[in-house]
Image (cartoon, rainbow over all chains, first blue to last red; front, side, top):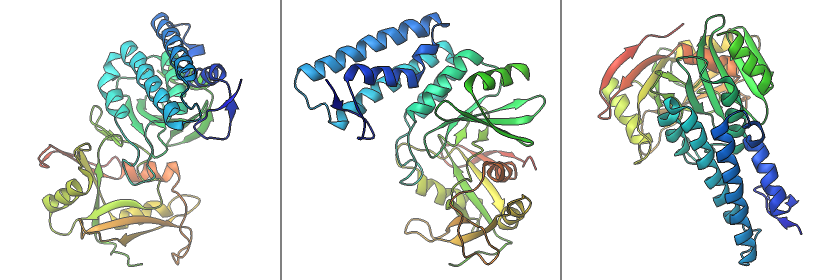
Length: 189
Length: 149
């Protein structure tokens, strides 16, 4: 059974496949190396499944984008909590970024992007806290940006898009996979 | 379009999520837009800060720092890259802020074609050229950080 149930409004997939798509975007499949993250992800998966089933069986219109958006907000908060629990040093900053709403700097400035959060989460769980001065920001698309001081490249910034990380320094500008970006920050430590 | 003079100085309000107070740095993408809001430094530092606070603060956002740069510096940075950007700082008065202006990137010297965005590299250079004023919740400057370049 399929439903129109997408934030873009033009995709068709079942509630269960929705979960698979979204959890993949958010990085659950890469959490296995982190016991707490994995456990939390599984709990969250079950939680979301139950919410969706409840929504479906109670007869609520599943193509109601507000329902879907609310589910995504729940996921965002819990996934941020995973990062905060693993990296308490970043907790205050991540909480502040989570509160940023659409229109924070003009009408076209977006709040935190799910796709970017997924890429950022996957990266950070593998890279760990690789520098003492990591600054974290959101750009106008809602994408995560970090900046830190690298001994070889000086101030480096990374923009986290869907599965791709833009790495930029004074003499460097390139797109990297999550694995390459992790290797980059660990090598230059 | 009325451009302000090269010898003027403008300030950009910095707050979450553009500013990270933990490391006292702003996002390298702060100047990527084609209409970056700034306020002219015409009546002293405190007046500038007050206008920025009045523009930005709405019960959620709080101005935590101000990035200050001259118009001539903005223009010079746009011209040192391979794909030159001809910046202009356009007067853009609002009801709340008579000193409001916008940094506009043009692809031509005659300033007829507005670029849709500014490259990350140029935005980084503008960020590095800022004088930073850290401000408290009352808007008083508590620290000044010199530009990196």
